[in-house]
Amino acid sequence: MNKFSTTRVLCALAVLVAATQAWAQNTPVSAAGPVGPYTQDAIPEIAKLKAAPNIPANADDLKAIQARAQAVARYALPAIVNIEVSDGQGSGVIVSKDGYVLTAGHVSGAPHTRIRFRLANGTMVTGEALGANNGVDSGMCKINTPGEYSFMPMGTTTTMTAGQWVVAMGHPGGWEEGRDPVVRLGKVLNINRPTKKDPEWYIQTDCPLIMGDSGGPVFDLDGRVVAINSRIGVKSTSNVHVPVDSFIETWDRLAKGDQWGAAGMFAKLGSGASGVDVTPQVTKAKATLSLKIYEDAAGLLITGVRPDMGAEKAGVKPDDIITKFNGQIVKSLAELSANLAKYAPGETVTLDLMRNSKPVQVKVVLDASDSK
Image 1 (tube, one colour):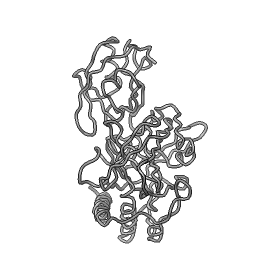
Image 2: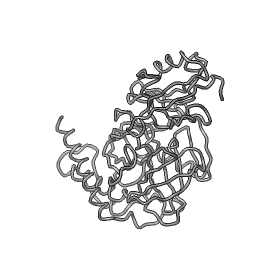
Image 3: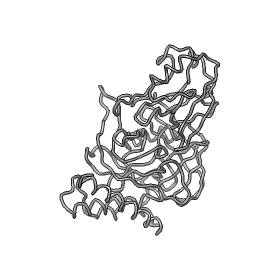
Image 4: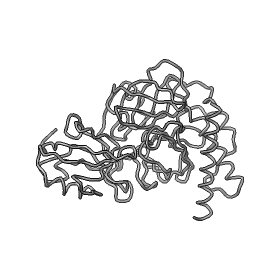
């Protein structure tokens, strides 16, 4: 490990220790209330800290990065939530004192779906999914249990640059008793802003994330939410996040429960990554799994499950990872399609999955390829 890598690891460890101490002290979020449903006001206590350079030149620069990251973690911890939808889990962040929550669209699911939120201190509250833009994987939820909630301000990616330090948070592997939301320090690798030729809108970072972190927030070192964890790969460089600007621009639609956009906009991201619907467009077989799958180094990540079809009835969930098809290890969509081609609609196959880092096995009755 080189000197710079060692420095980053030490800095990240310091953030985790400080964050745990801060949560134990129950430090509140900024006292300023939101303007409208959310706020973009800076947190004064963070704003007055020394600026953190992207490339540290000396020990003082490292201390500035550490101080900012620690402060962000301290203020953000009470606003991070674990989201439970049916038996699936994800993460989210509260952005208003009346309980609006930003997450990934594949976490929140269909509008009006009942959701349980577990606050960072273990308290369980309830609410529902609001809207989702499937095109960018943004989702909004609302806590309905009465009360005022700790929240974090929203920022923007318009002034961000590659190389900028960020803090990502969430519940890797799902909720764990006695463990606070986990803090990861990293850098922005790429910001793809939409154009007429390239409509995709996303951020990539090298924050080390795993399944369960989906829907969790990414903060700049001013403490503002700048993105939401969306697609997570085994390589940290393949992590993809939804820019917070998308939530701001579509706030009204999300808040009123609209759902729109076609999923699968991340086909060209990462090394060899692809997003494909395992239907007749992928294989000439007469059977389909009725799943949308994202192929990455992590494996075959399920990002969409078609309602009322065989896979959903068998209990397959978004964020599951397919490891075996009828006992055969599958590492690519090509291998999965080749195995699927051997079976006809109505036959039953066994899928071995990883769900929240735990093995799950289900039996799926294959659908016909003309299913809608």
